[in-house]
Every structure is written in structure tokens, then in C-alpha cells.
Length: 116
Image: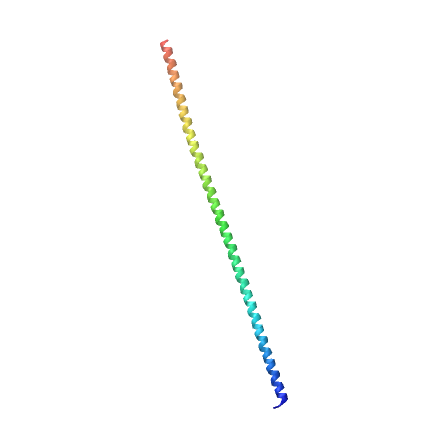
């Protein structure tokens, strides 16, 4: 067997093994980069979803606060209106009673003059 041929074949086998090893390492690195990119994309997606939920919850809370505030304002207006109506009724009853007393006083005075 020719020694040069054996050497040449052995060098070719080593070169082929080295090329296969380099290809396998490159594929491994490519997979690592892909996995890392996918993980970053998933992290960004989860973060965006969390932020969107926070904004939604904040908006819902603000809407509920506004609703409660509006209901409180409406209740206060109703209470004021009821108090004003009651005050008007009491005032009218007082004026009626005062007018009745004046009338009775005048009638009594007229009777006293007539008897006199």
C-alpha cells in the first residue's frame, strides 16, 4: 500500500471529521440563538400582556370611581331637594298657623270692641 495514499486518505478523514464537528457546533450555536430569541419574544409578549392588563384594570377602577362619585352626587342632590321640600312645607305650615292666630286675634279684638 502506498504510504502517500494512506496519509492522504487519513488527512481527508480528519478534515471530514473536523468539518462535521464544525457543522455540528454551528448548528448547536444556531439552535441556542433561536431558543434565546424565542425566549426573549415570549418574555416581551408576557410583559406586554401584563402591562395591558394593568392598564385595563386601572381604567376599570377609574370608571367605577367615576360611577360611585356620580351616584354620590346624585344622592346628595336628592337629599338636598328633599330637605328643601320639607323646609318649604314646614315654613308654609308655620305661616298658615301664624295667619290663623292673627285671624283669631283680630276676631277676638273685634268681638271685644263690639261688646264694649
